[in-house]
Image 1 (cartoon, rainbow, N blue to C red):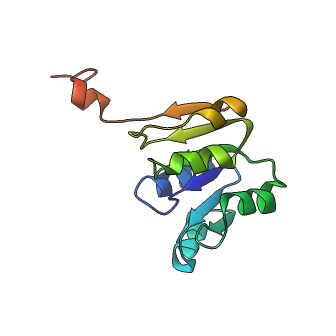
Image 2: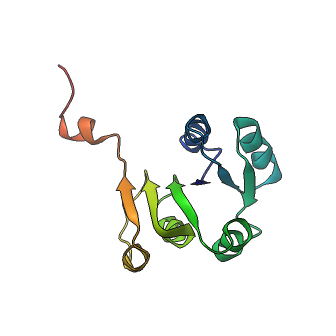
Image 3: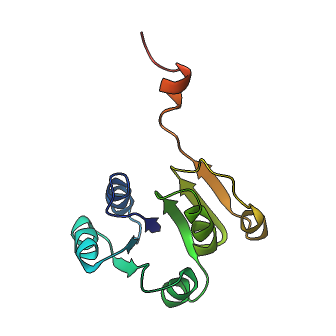
Length: 130
């Protein structure tokens, strides 16, 4: 599993839950300090996205195949990077996808996209007890 924003507010929880579930976790970070935090949280590998392109780290860590699951906590245009990092028939999970996206890679790679937006019950007043 590849996690964008692995040391952020949601990403660090995703990292720990993925490890708890038995996943091999690749944490994307922007600095060595954040890499150290990700490793303390259980990341098996850290990847500095400032030093490698998506294509480079996919080649290095998956022999160019891509990751089974990509968890994107960054959103917006980064969703395209998540699509590029996922393997054929892989899964992309995003918590921040309030932008318009080109879904070409989603189709050509047979990806599953799962969007999570926890504010729906509050915004629509559903599923809450009064």
